[in-house]
Length: 440
Image (cartoon, rainbow, N blue to C red; front, side, top):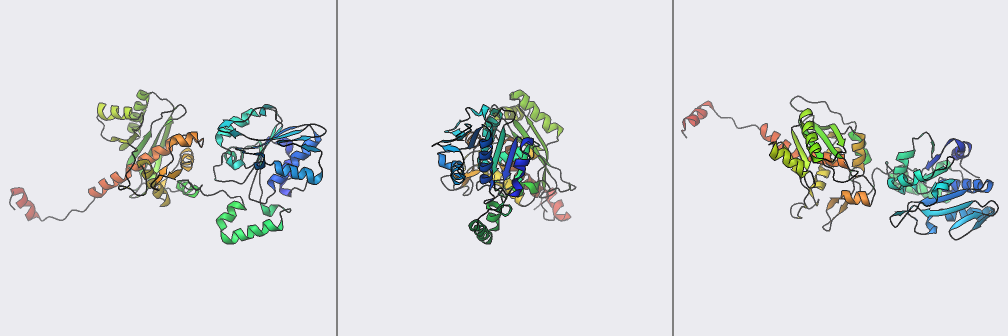
């Protein structure tokens, strides 16, 4: 088999696990090992095997070539076809497919599969996993994932790494005695040029952020420990409300509290699936009262305008305002294209300066999914919720948007505080008396 010793458990403990997650850097021998193990098993018993990835434009993008080379090198009893491999004696069949073809799921026939091998699993989306995994129904079916992690919250790693029915092994080129001299030299050269690239490419460390992420993993993790005691004279509370418009979306509220002159902390989070506007309006009012919120802001671009009108005009609450997301003219802002993006980067500044503490894991996870692109004037603009949902299969960041809206209130509140505590020029008692008497 010629496997690195670190991978022996995939053989020794094969019957104990349903899932096998092998991650790590280049040169670890992950793909070679799984290909050899599957060809060995397929020689011993009749199996139905699918080797797949998220998108496969042609057979050359699969592990087909690795298996064909092994069959020819060791003269294994398999017959090689253009799109599949079949054992000559026991009819084991190995097929290769992309699980998403032209936007549709390609999972027909997966119910009877014995072994599924998903290579380049860092590219598999949560939506694909949610459809694929329940389709593999055999009690003794085995599912292998091989991957070089991309970012910290890769869906496969996030879902399986800590499950008790998953064997997780991290493997690098340093663990592989069969790694070639050429690959060892490439790793050394990469280490000299960029330690970050070396850690990601050769040691399998996830990137701190993808190239279009708004917030980095380290910023968000640091925000969890940015605790700051409440200083006397502070305690202002600002709330953001994101109102759901679609079937699976939820309404969300995030409240931040001022802990000091520059410090803020997320002190309350809430979500609800009820779409009835009367219910939502009552929920907003209840949260404001119970949490002693000083100012609130509601997303009014969609159906949030209904609760906002009721609370502002019907109840006369002037401490509740609306958040709009209009495009911004280039002459007004040369860096950001709309209001949502402006305030997303105000939040980023708070994170970079360690001026905000975040306590809710689901909120942090949503922030990690937020992406940006550039408009036709080369200004940053957040990728819209619709595109994130439909193209990237990422659920709507309701809590993240509620936090961004709450952050949008900070500048106005800071301006009020600056005026309130601004030192006024001293006036003599005599000048005051003349003033009262109307004498210049």
